[in-house]
Image 1 (cartoon, rainbow, N blue to C red):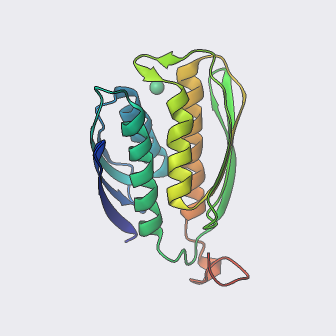
Image 2: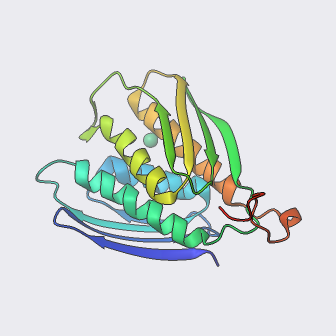
Length: 195
Ligand SMILES: [Mn+2]
């Protein structure tokens, strides 16, 4: 079972994450930020990860530290659960539509963290959530998961749909990229022999 837990405590946040990559999409999420909870629940569901995320963050400041640190801890837990990456598909990409919005997500579970994030929002808020924090979460996740992640929203109007298309696109790409390909016969999918 590819699973891991991470606890991460700073002066700003106290985060606990447990992840099982070969799960069923069962999520228990409580970050104190409703929109972020919604995004992480659908990430778990569409990646088929079992995911527990608890954050006690400094929400009296704003939602920045809570969102960023949730991304850091989830990225660390993902990398730990994946281990030496034996047998995985490694690459995945897809287009994820949500009503009028279309986002493209491409990933390489490379061990070389990189984010390209070409998604813009026309509004500053989705409910109480600052739309600029979507990028912050993706940056934190990609750097700590050790993945090369490209996200581009090709078109879209509604900010909720745009954010959701990015998270669902990531979820579906992760699901495909961590899938074990039996033809790999447990090898690390790199000519270098490690990722
Ligand atoms: Mn929604």
